[in-house]
Length: 399
Length: 107
Image 1 (cartoon, helix red, strand yellow):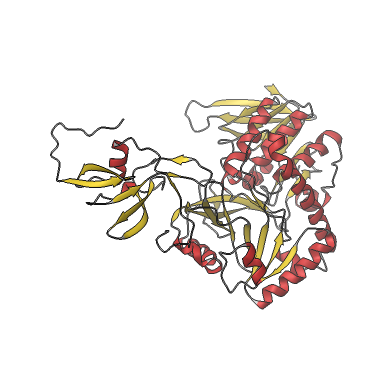
Image 2: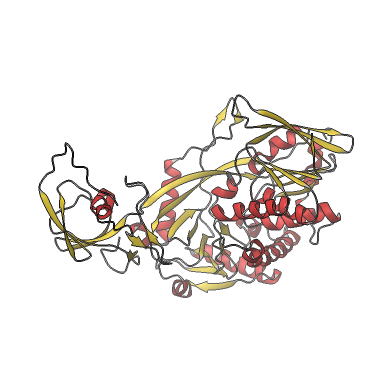
């Protein structure tokens, strides 16, 4: 039995960053990952740093006034944390924060952007409304029919293949013990601590069973956080969603901003090496067996690939000249109210969760605030709207 | 340095191509990548940040073997590993990738 102060389950961005901050705060930490560090959504997403308010929030703005205010304040925290991240990690992670454009193609979409700009400015987010010509001056490759855009100068992108490994390296340097290929199989309460059983090299026939003990568990298992919750007898409403991303051949620098669309599923950026990444929420199909999800890679839907690329070439016809190199899939987790779940589960004291959405843009911020919650009892910025206790009725008979 | 195997190999006709202005004699059926690697010219193109790139897969998937070719009045970027050499082809290596949309051949 190995004893630690905290056991972090999940070697993605949130898990590695939480483990790192906990170790910096003086706790002994074990990080347990079923596969390899950065193997799932943290390493497979497109690396967008998006801070503008989402679609659904604009439509229900009146009901969501306090939620909007909260989101914008959290966005400002995240922006500040990204501006420091390369200094903090003492390494280059291809960070670009040259701004993001959310495009409008129709008059209706322009009205939506105007409404959005007003809300965001009122809440203190730095956004500028631009007409078609202003937008094209900033991004000359955009089609003549683009009617306008909302520009947020803090948006950008970062390389997901570099970020989490860099955080994991720093966590190790700060004393975190990393267990990879170590699949958690059981979580039980024993007096005031938690006991975790795991299989090391679980794919091999000669796997080794390991036991861990700690008073704190952090469930940072992303799309699979529901399974980790289940082992601790806790229900978490996090549902896996498989998405796809396309990458083109390299070309000279052309797209300098994060490109999104207010009415269509699109995210587009050009990375440091010159490839253009095209995604934006087009779905892939997650394999299942007798109704249970399998954690294998999702299958591509060629129509979704076409739809995604069509959207991109509609707004930037010039990129039709580029050849597609690859399309890959990854699996993220969503919650019923589309807000992440970050905090302690009341029915299971010492069991913390950080999963369920925008884990790349907000991952380092969730990790820092969760660490403050664990080590000081209270985070420097409230996490109340994200508390797992908003779903406590699901755990009335659990824990 | 790469060399041609010679034992039990029957080569086709010779083909002359120019690599960065220098005339090189190669053989029918060889790809541009083969000839460039035989010449020890490993920097096929350069990224915008100035990094030299060389082929990785030699089967058309990695796109790291792009070179600029002039032939029969046409100028274009090609994958060296997927391009069979032809008489009087003129190849330029080590260039930076094209700026999209500026010239019709910049694909």
